Image (cartoon, rainbow over the protein chains, first blue to last red):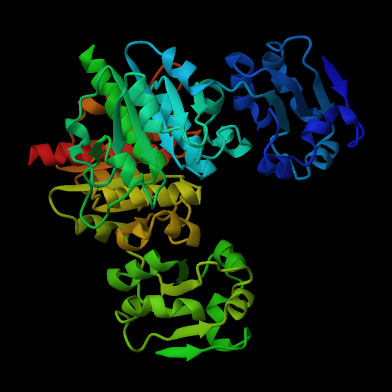
Length: 268
Length: 268
């Protein structure tokens, strides 16, 4: 359903107004995604209902195949680039925005629904949206079944995190724990062996063979995982060349998840 | 040699004026680095001569140990945070800047000076400073001997690339080829087996055992390496889960260099 919009103050595109400020403030039940690849995943993934799409006129033609996959009830607002920029509050070079409805999952139900052989990525206090996006991208690339976030993590459905994840934040199942709920306990309680990545890990990554149900935890760069997490988990480290003692957390997850995918393939 | 600066127009701190604009325009023979970790590497690495340091007053005390490693002839300019911000043209939260002299190396001399067993990271058209920094960080973390850049790569000594590399861009030897010089030919001519990473690689990464002198090539995300590069090299790919076909280039380098470091350790 194409709807042409000529007035930046049109009340129908209210959800796209002042995108940056609203994203940072947090939206009630909604999120904004941008770009063609992300829109495709949103349409095909089917996890988060699409409320509407806002396109620059020049983009409509090249998006016909994607738009054909939309339910007829979802409005596709089309505006000139100038009107679109005025709505969003900054230049939207990609010319493609979508407003989605969050479909949050409860952690317990998510974990309970996973198969007997499953890999969960656990995240503690990841506050950087680039790293969050990279972690989801790698989780998807190496087939992790779910991502579980503690209460101190930033929002994976923040626009930049979605973009950096190349849409994986929209397709990989995830849940965020309430403050006060313990990540290690939640995972162990669901039958997962919980393994924590740490530069001082007791086991070298390549020597690690994962259990059928494995959860692997990553903490923020700098502080790393908290001592009370490390004390209750098996710890694994990545051997590095002299002088260097840390990697970017998203890169670390890529190395670890690549190892785990291979180990699972070998185990059959 | 501590020199107090009270006037943002003091000609002695000319090199720090309008940092952003100058960095983007490219500097003749100089570069600016920021932050404590990077300053430490610059002082201890000894590769690029330091021309001067500019500190916010509040930082001087905590940097005494680092400054003690400086030659007495290198001026350390100290200014109030306000004067420092006025000089740089934006708020310098870290309060630590340094002006270094580029010590460029010729590619041929760099390659000729490497040992019989050596690993070179070759970069083609990496235009993003975050990725450039991440590639250098991983090269250092896994002990690559050198990085060789083609003429289309961005500058590893751009301020942000240095910061993201956690200083590795200052310590890992690198050279950039002139336009018209072929990267594959330069490496093969120096006795390196040249291997290119590609989502369609003929060999799976884990099956790859590197030669004594190995060069591994990474291209920009999206376009990837050019067909004329892939046609002349052995190609290696990383197996991924269904639906996903690419990783971030810095993450890719982390996975590949981790594999190579382990393979070299096994080969003894």
